Figure 1 (cartoon, rainbow, N blue to C red):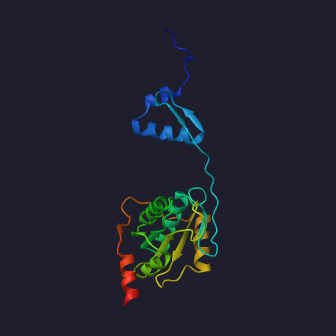
Figure 2: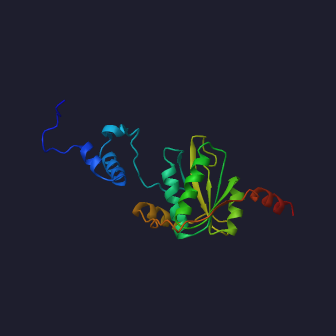
Figure 3: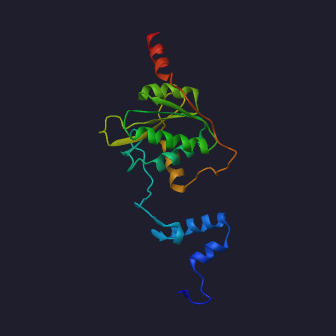
Length: 209
């Protein structure tokens, strides 16, 4: 059967066949990123499922709050974690029982680790317990929206002295988010992930003394 492709023309198929596998991946990524839906011959159809917009969140009277997985997204938590790991260092992270909590803890912790600092998972804890537990680390973060309804979630940041980030510190995080000031990624400079399941017990024992 005669080819329907005009003589001398270059198709995506012929281009992909001519390059190495690693280069094919880069071409596929480039094509995918340049259009919302790309049909790449034998690779099948790639399509986006939703549009994701980015706007810098602002700290309120008690951290950053919004609808979980809509306003307070894993992407936001990752970026905040990168900033904390870069500007402060080892960070302990806790959460309340909201269903979006575990996802946001993992994302924030990944950001801390990628900046070369250690991320310590405190698990399900109260805000006062996390604030007290922050004294052994450079800072702390609690994933919670306090009294707000279940769809909400938030990120509240703590200093080692048990005090919440002040306005200057909050503006510093906001500024880093707005300017995209994140540490350059390297393969050999990541932190260590660990857990501290004893925070609640330690807090109770301290109260009973």
